[in-house]
Image (cartoon, rainbow, N blue to C red; front, top):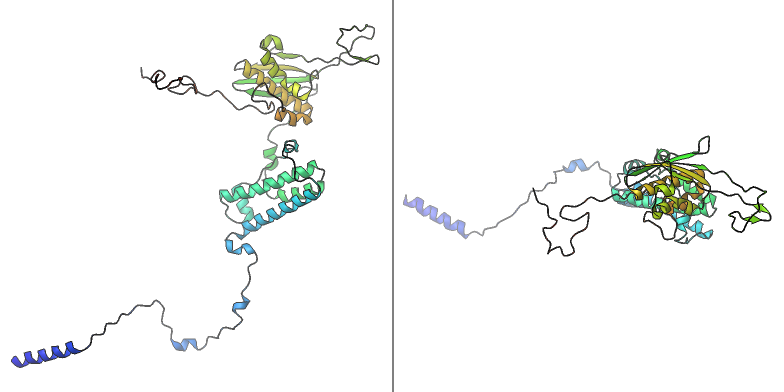
Length: 358
């Protein structure tokens, strides 16, 4: 027993006298490859790295090469069109003259259809970027048409046609054209606020004075070289009443005849209108809206004039008589006197217009 204890103590002293070496090992994920399996592999040629195929387009590394290629193509077409217009002295175009350019409506493809065309999923921002360039190209086309550069306009039309919707003609031709009937009458519906007016107009008959009558200084006929000019008058009937009888307020009557003033067609047409709903202001502007639509049917060149409403001071804010004024009466708000009216000193009269359950 004693001998065993002595032997263990001597062994312990021997172990503690040895230096302690600690090693750290790591597990590698590289699989083991036997060296014999590498004997049949041919070495890489030194020209391998220099013979890598180049990308077909510089936009390859963007991840959306189709979209950026199409965008770059549109930008190049825009630059070419602008340079052609500059050579024709049509650019820079005055800002004030842009409102007189011919109206060419456009209906571009939606985000889904354009994604299929460009073979890439478009976000809303990228679709807007493409549409912005298309609108600039369409603006150049308008300038080319106004300047008589038909070749430039035709090229732009071909380039823009593939980006238009398939049902563009149906969408742009949704508004039915007004055409005269067998008697030369045209019919249109005008609206304003809660009022609606059915309006018919027809050309007036030329009235001339009798040749046997003797002109007087107070005569309304203008004589030039002994030949009298025809007298033309416009008759406006509203619900089978004369204009002055139905609208006693002169401001309402001026609203009704405003399309004739803007277009200079006083005395050329007679008007018959059936109006319902709303007050006198809404009814007068509804009749004016219907008259303007009828005038464009007889004289298409007046569309631009009536669409802008003239450049002078207008009797009412909605001066664009060809387009319906979309403003409606705003509803009353809880806690206010009217739609927006509140007491002058609101904190002193707090509770005067407050809602109270009764």
